[in-house]
Each structure stands twice: as C-alpha cells, then as structure tokens.
Length: 350
Ligand code: GLY
Image (cartoon, rainbow, N blue to C red; front, side):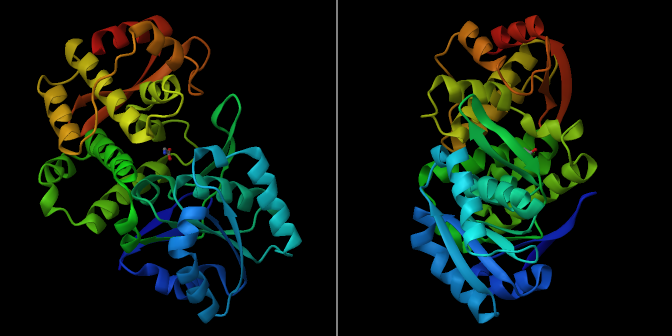
C-alpha cells in the first residue's frame, strides 16, 4: 500500500493507494473516524459494482451502515439531491461522531463531501474514489460543491476528508471516456510541474497506474498544503481549464471534461508558443502526448464564441482573469490579464 500524507491547515489525513482496498476499507477507516454509523453515498452504477464490497468490509469492522444512491452523472450534482442526502442523514439519525462515505467519482465525492460539511455543521468524511480522475484530483484537497442553474460548482465549501482510500482495482471497470478524463488531468499535472512524469507518459505500456496516482497525489499535496483555499498557487491546477470549461459549456456539456481540458491546454500552449512565452517544441510535444491517449487538441469554435464563454468563468474577477501559462513542459505560471489580452491569447491559440 502506498500512502501520501496531506497536511493542510484545517486537517491532516492519509491518501492510501493500492489494489483491493475496498476489502480493507473498514479497518482503515476505523483508524481515522472510529467505529460509527456510516452513511454510504454512491451512484446507481457504482452501487451495482462496489457498494456490497464496501458494506461488507465496514460491517466486518463493526460499522453500522446505511446507503443513499443518486443517479450517475453530472446532472445529479444539484441542490435537490443535496437536500435529499441531508434529509437522509437526519432521518437515519446520523450524529456528529458519524461519517459520510463517498463511494464513486467526482460527482459523488463533491455532493457527499458538501453534505458532510453542512450536516450538523460538519461530520466525518471518508472519500473512496472509484474513477481515475477522482483518485488523482477531486477526492484530495477538500473542494466540495454542487452545481447551480447558473453554472458548475457554484455552491460549495472547502472541507477536507478524514481519509482517502483509492482502490486501483476499481479502475478495471472504467469506460474509455472516464479513463480519458483521468489521463487528461494526469497530462495536466505533468505539464504544470513534472517533466519526468511527462517523459514516463510517453511509454504507456511501462506505466504502473498506482505509481502515477501516487505522483499526482504528491503534486496535489504540495500545491494544496501551500494554498488550501485556492487564493494563489492552487490556481496552477486550472491549466487548460478556463478554455476547457468554455468548450464544455459550448458543447452543452456533451463533451467530456477531460477532452475539453485537453483542447484548452492545447490552445493556451499554442498561444504561448506563438507569443514567445514558452519553448518552441512545447505545443508539438503536448499534442503528440494528447494523441497518444486519444485526447483531442482542436476545436471548431470561433475565437469570439470561446472568449464569450470563457469570460463567464467563475474565476474572472471584474475586468481581469488569471490564466495558467506554460513556459516549458514541467513549468507553468499564473498571469493575471485584462479581458482584451485574453482575447488576443485565444486568437494566437486557435
Ligand atoms: N481540481 C482543482 C483543485 O482542487 O483545486
């Protein structure tokens, strides 16, 4: 078992990574939340695959379990399901010493994490991510949220879990799209700060997925421990995301997040190369890497529609927006610019 310890100002917790971890979830969780009532929150797909395993493991360790299932997919991350979860916790008599177990991908982790934060002003939280993306990103660092009709993740809180348990065996049932979503974010980590990881990703057959997850979680640890509340350095994790979110939105959320972020990373890298900000080979190297993982690098949207969709990003502050710009593979930096500068950047990138 590989373990990364996350020490944020608000909480310290381990992220455990290995195969067959669901069988050990009860024993591992007991060390960090104590034996208590466990409210498992999951989605209808993960429920059929892994909930029994988790329940058996928890019961064997002495936990009393109850379970709430939401429909799979981003549409479920809404205020209605959020209230249903809170009422479920109340109806089942969950109290302060009890725990929410978020079993699933980013949607489940975000909505269940937010419910754990709000219910009784905060009960314990165990994140058990089952997708690659959730293992390397959303389960770590304490961002929890639901979507509002005006946009994604508009209501939420920073609420760190008590423990994160990554069962790499769960990745065997991931479909192509979910795997691609994960690899887009892994490539993002490599470009923002790890050239060695980037080189490793060039030989997919040689990869041990638990090593990759470990490395990404270590990178995220370094970033969130320095800036838990996303006021500075943590924004580096948004590489490719401002344009990625714009492309996702323009597709009516039919394009997967990972694919949209891939295109966002490619546009911004091409722009930086054309503006002389980053090394000349950067864009080609990135596009080759995205191709290797069957991820796209181009969009048919116009400069103006991308710009208009991008300026409604929640990270925009008045007439300024902060973008993550690459200098070379393995190094990016934050640049706050005017909206007209951003329009020029988009022009250089498409
Ligand atoms: N997913 C980006 C962050 O946790 O800040």
